[in-house]
Image (cartoon, rainbow, N blue to C red; front, side, top):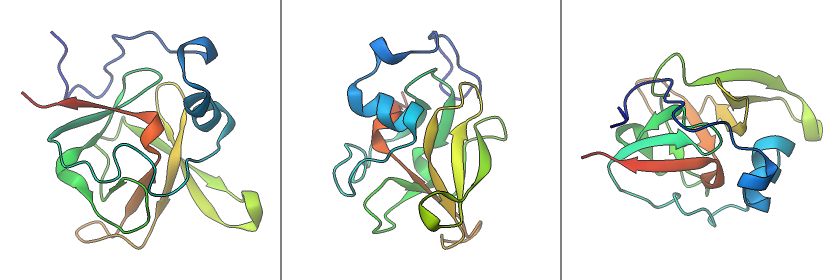
Length: 136
């Protein structure tokens, strides 16, 4: 049985292009984004842990998810210090902070400083890169 709270749940091998949908590959490996309000988890209220679709790394707890109105699943905190890595992103003429999976480096989305307390952060994440495992 897999422990959904383990930060490095890599029971799955890292998926490559043939294992991902075209949208997942485009977002995870080519750093694109899904259109707002189209992802399967944007309005999801199910209790569980969100994992990286490419490698199974535990990323976010549904208890830290909130409705930011942005059109993407938003979290005010990562699951653990082993979940993500942040990188400067100056693409598209903007200054942003990209969020990638710490294990497989899949592009997840971006983090902004306009979220709720206690962190003030908004991790704006593409649904296509997430796999929700319900808490039992």
